[in-house]
Image (cartoon, rainbow, N blue to C red; front, side, top):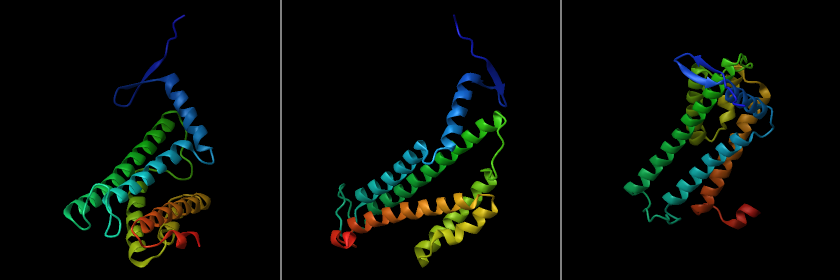
Length: 193
């Protein structure tokens, strides 16, 4: 017997197979209930790996570039801009993934939780992240001091806000440790002891 998949038209005339969407929605809802969602861990792993690879390929004054890029040369700064561009790509891709998942949930009648990742909140988070990054780099203060209260004001729960800030502390500390080790700022014995 031939299986018939019901198609429906949404918004701009796009057709979606009801069965495929239902399966995808089920996967999204199951992933949201996981302690460490696999797709998010993999995505963050790609981001960290990209940044570390960029640092190794770029090199520094104490660490020779694999590509032969001289420290502070034009190619060095192009590599620096490429790392920033790659980070922006990951930002836009992550935002796109979240928007697609929210749109799918909305089509099936699932209301947003206490926090809605809409365009306004995305803009706020982007601006706050930029301010936190600049102040953190210049003054050495933690981004959680800057991001914490506004995130609570947007409706993000205290546990989610703390976990988000803590995750980025771990990730940035790890990348900075590897960068300092590669660039000669610290030695292996200093890391161990």
